[in-house]
Image (cartoon, rainbow, N blue to C red):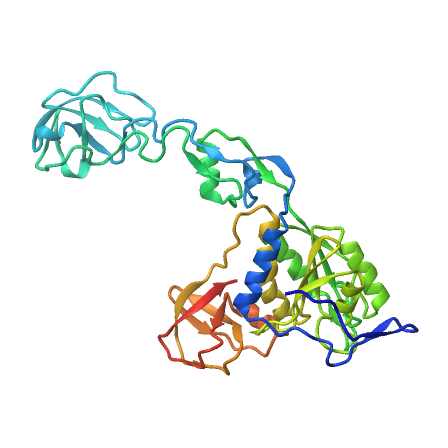
Length: 420
């Protein structure tokens, strides 16, 4: 679904663009439709990020650009998973003569014969002849003998050679986000460095005459530029490289010039100026640059006026200007685009279910993402004063996802939750 901007006129003396009320020509999308549109368009663009080599620790949260295979069997030997005694299962229960011990990192030089036992530590290789491990808690040692009343099957408390992976098995695929388990796997397969995709460069452009820089003292009618800072933090967390542009005033020429600058990055994220007001000039400025628009309104709260499109071969998002709306819509839509542009093969939305601690009602029609506090398996709505209420988000640690078709929830009902 694309469209060109229609029905606008500019005021040359001021650079303002005046938009008639009927200029929007596309019906708003549902949340799922909008998110599917973002994923489809980014994937269909066939983006191929550059590849670079970084050290193992520098690769954390980067996207892997090479397949990783096991360089040997994992584990490379039959490994004890308990402290105890290595014996023959056929001899159990009984009393055994202790003929030695083996610790992790060592190898027992002999072989276990009937009636013999080797004391063994967790992680040590099994001695020849033994086929199970009796846990030390189930043994009684007296001098050089050990007695147990346990009966075990062969293989008990042993991780067999190659039970985790055989040599050559694919362990991590290119496009995987590297987390700390992946760091452990990369280290265990001998990768002091690794190939990753280059971080996408994300331009961040806040718009509005009312915005001043963070270090300035605002007049009563002004606000500090918190959106650019929070977006930069979200971009960093999602694996991108943020580039904050100067604030765009509410004039068409200045906004267009800054948008052109932002389109030099891999993705442009704007905040503000995307509603239907007289001074909302973002869409006309984009249209003047030949943009195609995939949607400009979504049936969600917060964040209904939200623009997604492409101009000069680069994707852009025009997020609402209210801080909560900016933060929520980035997580729901722009983050998915950023992750795909990072080389990730998927960009899932990590929802979980939690029980409501109190009843909740809302007016159906919009999917709502409301501040909430989740603790273990329960979630409690956090009182908020609308999409400009940043303090409420600081009291919350999640967004409660309220279904557009469900008007009432009872205490104890399960509801989807998106962690912050």
